[in-house]
Amino acid sequence: MARKRATKGHFFVSFHPDQLAEILKSHQNPEHYMALINKDRDFLIEVNAGGARDEISAHREINLLPSKIAEIRVSRDIEGSKWKLVGYLEPGMINVKASEMWTQASIIFIFLLLTGFISCWKIWQLANAQKTANLKIL
Image (cartoon, rainbow, N blue to C red; front, top):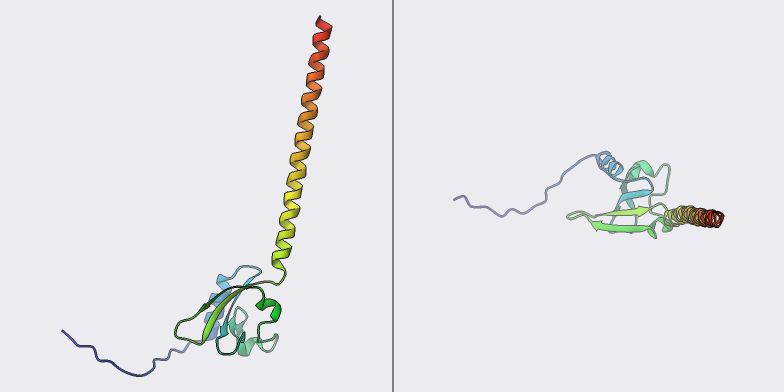
């Protein structure tokens, strides 16, 4: 039986952050975003679907904006790293979607109400026609 020796040290893995950006991009939905942020420096974006921090700093803020921080719905520490994966929504998306749902529900309700009214009116009309026919027969 072979014995395992305890070794001390660190094992480093190097890879391009573009690969992580592609993974994040492929797993996020429209209006739902994911980013890897630094645990030590609050809300400093390390990698998001737009690329690594050095790439995105040219065209946008490298820290999550307070409006986006308020929309964070999930956050998970990445074991063995100084990164945290956060998932957040487009600011205001919940209100827009709720408004759309209420509009759709109102349209359906009006349609059902109109259908019910037409059905009741038709039933009333047929009942009156039947009464008139019965009176003519007698």
